[in-house]
Amino acid sequence: MWDSIWTNANLATMTEDGYGIIEQAAIAVQNGKIVWLGKQSDCPENPAKNTYDVAGKWITPGLIDCHTHLIWGGSRAREFEQRLQGASYEEIAKEGGGILSTVKATRQATEDELYEAARPRLQNLMREGVTALEIKSGYGLDTDTEEKMLRVATRLRDETGMSIQRTFLGAHALPPDYKDKPDDYITLICEDMLPALHKKGLVDTVDAFCENIGFTTAQTERVFQKAQDLNLPVKLHAEQLSNQGGTALAARYKALSADHLEYLDEDGVKAMAESGTIAVLLPGAFYFLRETKMPPIDLLRQHNVPIAIATDLNPGSSPAHSLLLMLNMACTLFRLTPEDALAGVTKNAAKALGLPDRGQLKEGMAADFALWDIKEPAELAYRFGFNPCYGVVRDGAYSVFAQSSMDSHTEPSTGCNAEARASL
Ligand code: NIG
Ligand code: FE
Image 1 (cartoon, protein in one colour):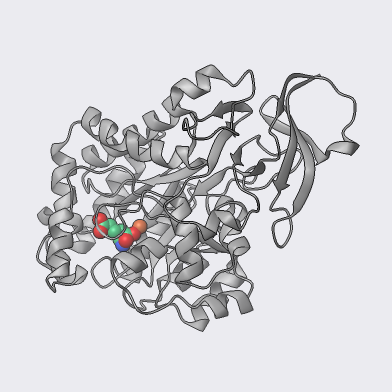
Image 2 (cartoon, protein in one colour):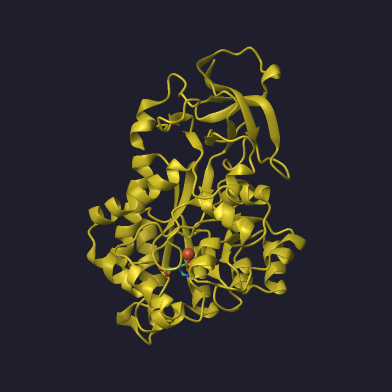
């Protein structure tokens, strides 16, 4: 007997090129895994403990936000004003503002304060059908504060039941106490910070900011070597503001992803294609920094490099709290098709996080999916500032979101998981 079945649904399985649509479908779940899906008329007679008739709603894989800096202290609204008055992101960073101003506020905040600030950001994403995401450290730049951030990420994971990958980004900026001594700071990361945090079980992945205002490829490589020694996968903030060759380095270390990529050239694209590294594009940062150099979308397509899309949620370059909005921006700014954009926040985002059992609706995969009040999947990227998410299933547990009283056609089915609903 199955645990639950959702009937009268339309599925965008994301299992092939395009949406992989199955209309008038059903999807059944047992022990947190998808055990059957297909045309409802082909459904075997296998009774389920719970049956949910979803009245023609669409079901997609749970959305995955594969690049966020969701935990931080303070605000950078003042910096936004400075940029509008003409200061550049790099200038502000060089004067000790930017990332370092967030480092100061994050060091001052208690663990509980960081948790309370991060939770509504996460809830906003969850409410939009996000079931898995990545959260980076990198606003501590000392062992204690990096640990504090990673502990908050762990607590968010454990308390919400979301699938959360924790990324150590100690090499995000040079802390003031190491001014003019970047190599010494990299030594601290490699010999102290990363091994200590790894030993405490707080790190899933390792990232760095390879940039003229960040770290050189040689410094990044030292961090990657350490990650490799510890058997941790790597990823990289690469070619965001200039072409440093970081992507080729990331590819040599079989990085899960290289992210941003506006200044990437064809050699870098080829290196990614060979290593199977995913290109993570961040339209929120492109938009908010008023970047004009487009990431090389055509080259990525020509060389069959899979493209993922993420919010880059952070206080400085992308205070973007909506992954759905990023779908729209990926289409309007980067000219992705709505189906490529949806692949970018499902199957390709799963690859960027090394999650082989998520991002597609397929038998044997985790029962993580989102239910939508839409007429066709392209609507997810088409509308902006509107959230048609009806509910989510996470590891088989169903939560229906409260519907507005104006919605007469979206009465929740019986038996939604009250516990999962409460956790939202
Ligand atoms: O992804 N590029 C470096 N890191 C972040 C920005 C962090 C910040 O400005 O606080 C990014 O854009
Ligand atoms: Fe980032």
